[in-house]
Image (cartoon, rainbow, N blue to C red; front, side, top):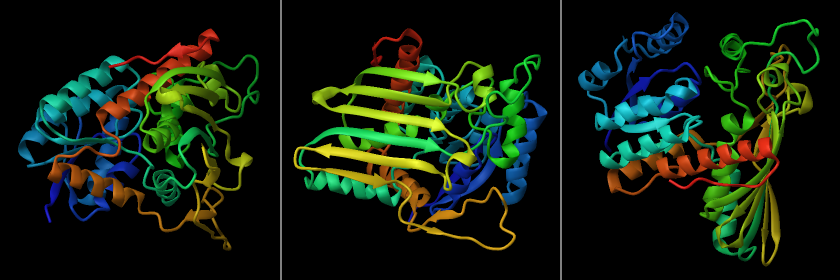
Length: 366
């Protein structure tokens, strides 16, 4: 069994990605690295993870890639830097595990695809496609039990807070600064999209339902129509980004898709959120709850922000890394490679443009 040493290239957004990587026995965290010119709060978060895993923190990405004998880079920086760090890793001949979103610029996604393919390395975007409910949905579609798939809808309502609710601040209060808010919110997991540029739920979480649809259909999205709103949280409304959206997808082969997505706040749902897949085929349909199977856990002194309902039989992190190991060792593609990630980013961009114009918008090809 091959073992792969991993460089964690910035860990300011979500440390669950490097932790998920390290959960697989073939992948070992060897070094944390970032550029020396990053601000102090970034170095602090990077150093915390390095201390926890007792590995060095190097304030020089290129030197860390060159000197620490790594085969995989794990990128979880601010969204604006995702592709740049991944490209540098690919150019060093290193495979890439990248946090979402792929980027907030399609031009950056295109640069990354070129680097991945030119250097013959593997890429996987972190995803939830190996949750038990998703694997069951895929088996249901592939078995033909509901016939030929005609339409897919995904509800993806994420019940996390994001600062003060809409309307809770006074009319003379200044707008909430996006990055300042996200840095402060990181401590309790309500940070959402960490980056200098404000990002709504379509950009931050849209990868998940769109990745489900991509896996189940294999079809490209050709045109979208969307509606968005800053409905729940003041920080979204102040920064002109969505925390609630609906998107209709016209897909190749006559397939129809749709999704409803939102960061609906902890008070809106007793669990992590309302996340369901609705599948319609020529022989029948199915509704699959993404959180099942699950068990409820309640006890005295339970922290208020601890999730009461826990997924069971969940090997998603392990399976993502197992999929990457297979791709490296057999030359096949990962479950969510760079081209699929770019297609999702293009769909999100088209949806945001559609919401702004009130018109259907074509999805940009590579």
